[in-house]
Length: 234
Image (cartoon, rainbow, N blue to C red; front, top):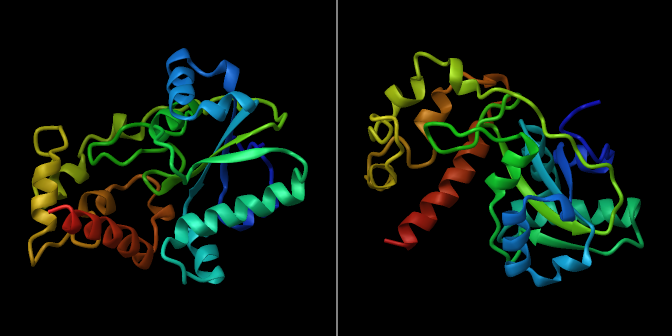
């Protein structure tokens, strides 16, 4: 059994949403339960929390095949795919999106609980199977009755990376002392001739799971969106 596919759903997998983890809400760590209850009081109406993500290139291919005409194509495609899944597999089961949505939650915390996430020098989650080429796409509350997903057990790929090419290749020198300096990164990205305006050189140079590296178009899309947010806030 694939440890990342708790839902075993062709509908989700065909949409490139090939990573799923199921938690019983009552069994989440106390701090996580309290924060969830504070930010989403209606969570008490549900039994389970489902974390859904993607690893590799299939999600982008499915998204492009579906079209990218909306203002938020990634979120809209994700939600539509999950809605089809529930309509087909759980037509009478109440569910609610936490993310994408109006609620602020820690995706990395949930990823760590699922065993998907290890920290990396360049601040993108590192996964033993997918490297940094995975992403959290949705968090759903539902009255489903799936078995709870065992956490994936893995060691951080960064632990045995002696050369650390991500640090040495960062043109902003934002990683030089082993810590990520956001201001250095943003300042460099905003320069007219920045090599990281629509990409992250440090991330691309990481050798882990290079076979799953996003296409150039996908990298440019995501970093282009983040660049627009940076420019709007300065």
